Image 1 (cartoon, rainbow, N blue to C red):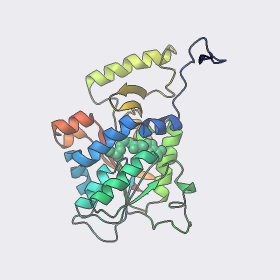
Image 2 (cartoon, rainbow, N blue to C red; image 1 turned 135 degrees about the vertical axis):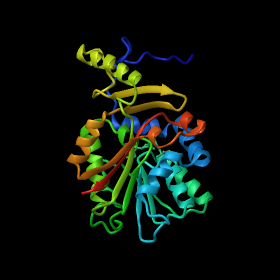
Image 3 (spheres, rainbow, N blue to C red; image 1 turned 180 degrees about the horizontal axis):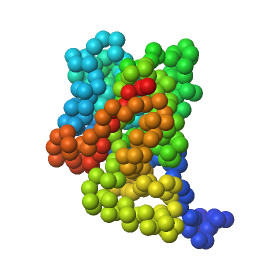
Length: 278
Ligand SMILES: C[S@@+](CC[C@H](N)C(=O)[O-])C[C@H]1O[C@@H](n2cnc3c(N)ncnc32)[C@H](O)[C@@H]1O
C-alpha cells in the first residue's frame, strides 16, 4: 500500500506568525547554526579590544584572588575562557541554551581552565539550585557581573529584562559592577531614520506581528534566527534605576576604540554600560 501523507486538520491558511517568546529565543540559540557561530567565536575571536578596555575598568588588575566574577549569557565561553587566560579565577558562567553551555564546558576543558558553568535562565536565578539564596550550593555574592554582547537585550519584554537585572543584583555584593552591552537606537542618523519609519509602522498597527514592544527586531542571517530588543539610552537608564543598579558610565563602542575587521564582522555597534549594585 503506498504511503500517503494526510493533510493535517489545521491545513489551509498559513498560521499567523506568533509573538516571540523566551522559549523561541532559547531554541534559536540551541540551533546548530547559532552554536557553530558562537563556538567559533569562542575558539578563535576571544575578547574584543573594546571589551578589554571596559573589563580593565571594572575588574582588579592584576587579577585578585577572592574576586568572584559571574558571566550571564556566557554562550560558548568566549569571555569567561578569555578571562581565565588573563589570570582571572573564581569564574562562574551561565546560559539558558544548553548546547552553548556544553560548548563552553568543552572549551574550558581543552584550555585547562577551571570555570564553573551552569545551565540557567537570568530571569529565574532565584529558582536555580546554584544561585537561589540560602541554597546549599549557592555561591557567596559575586564581586562583578558581566552580560556581554547584548544577551540581556535578547530577553523578550521589558518586564523580563528588568526581572533579570533584579535577579543579577540579588547575587552580587553591594558596589559590584555590572558590565553589559546593548544596541542604541540613536547611534547614527541612519539608525534614527529607520526607527522613525518603524514608529510610523507601530502607530499604524503595521509592525511585524512577531514583535511585542517598540524597539524589538527579529531577523534571520547565517547564524539563524535572532531576536533583539534595541533600546534607547533613556530606557536603560530607567531600567537600571528600577532594578537596584546605579549607572556609572556608558560609551558607544566606537568612542572606545576601532575594532578589528573580524570583530566588526561578528558584531555591530553597541553601547557599553557600567552600573554598580546599589
Ligand atoms: C549574543 S549571544 C552572546 C554569547 C557570548 N556572551 C558571546 O559573547 O559570545 C547572547 C547569549 O545570551 C544568552 N541568553 C539570552 N537570554 C538569556 C537568559 N534569559 N538567560 C541566560 N542566558 C540568556 C543566549 O543564550 C546567548 O548565549
